[in-house]
Image (tube, rainbow, N blue to C red; front, side, top):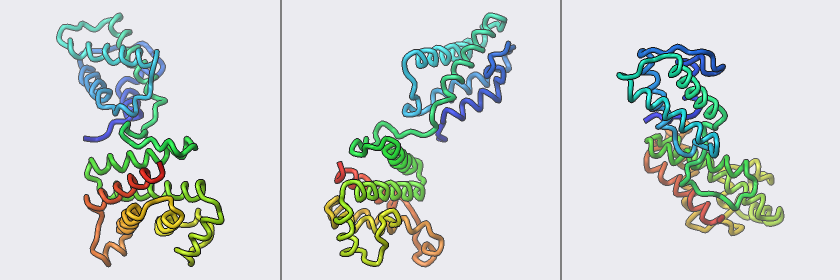
Amino acid sequence: MPRVVPSQIVEFIDAEFSFARARRPPTFDHADIDALSALVRLTDELPDELMTVSGRNYSFLLRGIETIRGTVANRVSFSFGVSLDERLRNAIADVREILKPLPDEAPSPATAELSFIPDAALRDSIRNDISAANRALHDGLWKAATVLAAAATEALLLWAITERKSELEVEAARAARIPKAGKDPNGWDLNHYVPVAEEVGLIKTETATQATLARKFRNFIHPGRSARLAQVCDKGTAHSALAAVELVVRDLS
């Protein structure tokens, strides 16, 4: 099933009920019932993690949705008129106004909190990638799941190497494990982060092994490599990459 996001609902309202944005006087008739029904269904399918509203706004959102739902449920008996038209307009306008500022992307509640990362923006960015990777796995998007999970692993290891270890420790590990790499960790990739993180004790050997597999699977997206190795991202690579990021989170927590 396609994922519903707040901006999609706002766009639908603007297309079907253009009066709602400025709360202009509306005129409804029974031909609008289908659009009202679709609006209710869209709001019902909005993922819980994107419903980041509370207090008064949440109450008004629920009231608006239920007003629209009631109109649809009583489509046969309702006689549209000034009173109902204005109530419906306000309900639709409230839904639009409350949903408009909401984000289209947020981690699912089941995603690891990553509370060990103090930088909120970075923490949220990595959590979004992990959540999106799990969602892609659920939807059968193997390449997306593999790449997003590997990218989250890469970001976690870069953060840990630069924030939890001294420059001397990192340089000693680089010289021992990846001597041909440059000295700036920001210029490395997963192929470099994994051995250095293992060398300085940030991740366990089993985690390094799994993360190395994730790195190899991520390389399969390169057309040339896929052709040479006759390999593509599949359900197995997606599960493996997600296992890697979960093990890294475990070791860093």
